[in-house]
Image 1 (tube, rainbow, N blue to C red):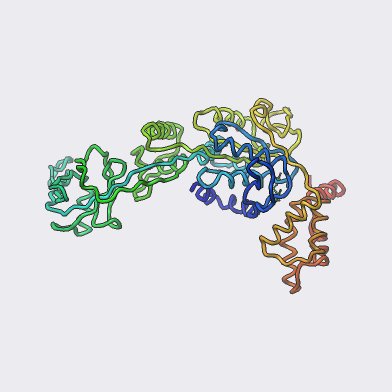
Image 2 (image 1 turned 45 degrees about the vertical axis):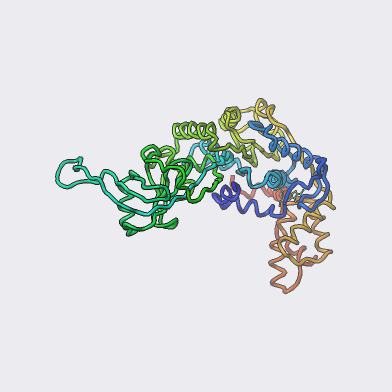
Length: 457
Ligand code: ATP
């Protein structure tokens, strides 16, 4: 499961997505045509059909390194369509949503933020075979050596553990920390001990599964357990993203989950996520893929309001898309011709440099009819469990078609608040009262033009 983790990382993202909680998919039939509205999406037949083709290409792994651009006026469902694509792809494919403006942070470089999100959109499915052994402890023998720093005392160099298992006795050479752990667990001669082996290397040992402690040694430092003593064998599949790996290796911690185990990939102390670290991780990931221990899952990076990116970011994106591990990039913009950020005077469609635009497949969204707006409002009313009169709903759809769909949707919450105060459902009277209090962006711009002289310049 990739999506929840990605979304959890950012509360804002979660909030942004909750306004689309009614979207469950693209609502297409097997031929790829719009079949129904039960998926929560209304209208936008052409865009939905195009999005369906994109989903099929992604599933067939024919979209890697490509970019898709949704363009259309504000509130015409670009983000909703991107989320519908994510729903169609399912939980097994990472989907990382971001707003382009997020790259402008005071502390972190723009390209670093883009790279982080890029790697959140690339998944790794790690396949491990977990084997569990059990054996009776015959001997616990700490092997000591002189303190290497000189002075008095001895240090435990390693621990020899002799076990009686189903097929004779065997000896394991273990890390000294394991000695301490076994002492803490009060393991004694005669006790049955639990040993876990993951993908061929000894991982955990202890009194039982819940007590078992993790090792911090290379697999070849152990005496391998002979075959025939396997108690249980399980295939474990874990999904993580490349960004999870970067973070885990930059801040290694002990633990029993797959991330902690993978944090030992690099065997290094806490560090920054640098280009070098990522490069090393990529090398290890390549190795895991080559040896069949892992599979790369190309996911989707969704960049909303992409016109907010500047020239440097677009250059980075072009380069990153060419890399052999790149997610599918889906972008959205509601801008027409505008200045490319970071340039002095270069204007281009959607504020995107032409050479980058040329690499994208563009999907257009169109304004909604009043009937479509009414249908969308009806869905949101149901999702938010609001009580609204039919007449008020029709009037709200009218407001939506005159102003914007988003404005109409935004009026629902204040209307419901006022209705609670009056102990009534949302009526046309309440809607009129609320509509008087607020204005949409177009109205605000007109007022600003008229009253410009009253404002500070
Ligand atoms: P902007 O350009 O301003 O970012 P947008 O095109 O991305 O806007 P959305 O944010 O997707 O628009 O849509 C605004 C609201 O309307 C959201 O709550 C969205 O879920 C809903 N919505 C938009 N289009 C549809 C649709 N076709 N069916 C159902 N709900 C929709």
